[in-house]
Amino acid sequence: MPRFPTEAFSLEYRPDLGILIGRWLQAVPPPELQGTYQAMLTAARAHDNCRFWLLDLRRRPLAGPDLNEWFRDQFSPQVAAALDGPLFTAYLAGPHQRMAAESAEMELHLRHAASLDSYPLFYDDEAEAVTWLCEQQERAGIRPVKLADKYR
Image 1 (cartoon, rainbow, N blue to C red):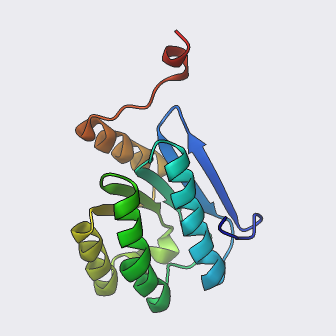
Image 2: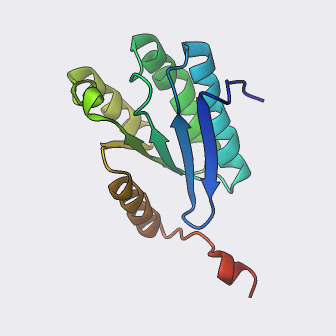
């Protein structure tokens, strides 16, 4: 099981939305940060290979070159193979992260992600991020089972 400090990261699956939500509550050193991403993948597998992730980065720095390299070369191919379809990720970033999120390096990272069937976008509004994830579910023909419908 991936290890990470629980006071630094929260992980929740929202069955009503069919979305996996990871929130970093503080900065996390790279080995533990990798553990949080592994925990996301484990949780996604446990919830019908959930491919719709909301990741809240607002309380931690955006990844540096070493983590981006790990994410690109090791984690992204693992996710693509494990979830039986493309991964849609809405990243919540704060105003203090805007410059890094819009950098040329990040654009290259996002283009590479798309080549691995991973579609990340940055948002500063959580409602807009959730709306985009729900739209991607509709386009993919995937709708979460509503609790009321599940028990009929």
